[in-house]
Length: 492
Ligand code: NAD
Image (tube, rainbow, N blue to C red):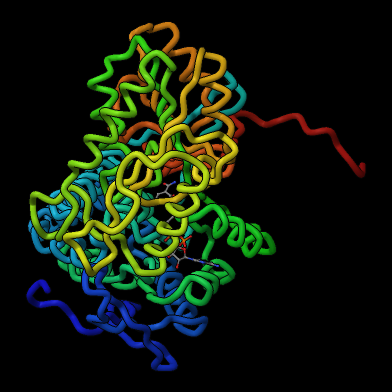
């Protein structure tokens, strides 16, 4: 257990740590021992009320929403530096709480710092539109922070995904209430001190711990939260959509995925293999953009399956804190059982060629050997449903049309990966894949300026770059007459 771990994780409201109004708590366990190591305050409607009220006060009274972009950016740059100063501890806590391998947790900490720098850069260079109707009218956009943003985040890479919402929301001048995932609330407890040290005014950042159906639902249905940015499962997204409807709230939804990797015979097969393995087994396979369906052209299929299975068998599964570990422990016993059920379903639906259960050397903890199924029919549940663990489905195809049809034959549309040395075909297939993001001859590396998000059941709205700022701001159009205008006279 890392040194200095708190044994209780309270809320953070109006600049103070506080317990739930009713004093209730829930237990938080680590995924290696599955033993509780701390309690967290179980937030409910009353706690969300207090947090939203604090955020509303900080929004109405300022100074945060009225500060210049430059002044807010100075705070955001300090936040980025403070995250980096703490990156070792942050990675260690994240690794302990989530089961993510330590080297990957460190990468996520650095990405979190980068998110703050990026959105600080963006608001200092932001320009807005202005139009002239010569001699008659000047029109311009007055961009305003939207208000109190409710941020609801999942348990995979929690700190980084929180930063993905906090950085643009704060850069835009919003005040926020964060509801982190109940499986992994530990790293979120670091935000309060980081923000205070960086000089974020009191009440701008508020955090309510608790389970989704209580704390999360209260935040969604609270009339004081103007918008909700949510990342999580598609089914939860649907629930939130319904709950937000009576309030007509702005919603940004980053949801589940079942992304295809399409490998043509003419691809650089070594590169495709490296990328396919990393794409589905990094972050324990608990990755929204995981390439969890690998479609391989018939001429290379048998060879690709054999090589992928052999490499999967050699992946180092073990203690997340060991720098040699490539796949750690799945986040929670409930999730582990769910993934294991899919492995059993897969055994009936397809051919198991690697993994398929707990590694022998790891009798305890939520460990699963990287699992590979071949000859998976598109009707199989392991082809259609998001498993969110180290499990991959391989399916052969004959030609481009079949590859596209298979790629699109699921309800999700988050990411896609295409491997071919035929440039024209690469673009053609990329355009035809129903996905918010496609990588051609590459795994998932993303420039922060580009849109991020899914289509179909994978999401609504895109964040990333200026789109995130658009979400957290309102664009008011101001029309100014330059001369007396002719108005059709009524009533005289
Ligand atoms: P989840 O939907 O169970 O929970 C996400 C968050 O929503 C948690 O904080 C939870 O407490 C809260 N929540 C649950 N029910 C709620 C309700 N009724 N009202 C309000 N809030 C509620 O998701 P998870 O299991 O934590 O995360 C895994 C999922 O997230 C996967 O489907 C994955 O693909 C998806 N994900 C998507 C992206 C993306 O960018 N598209 C990124 C990461 C993860």
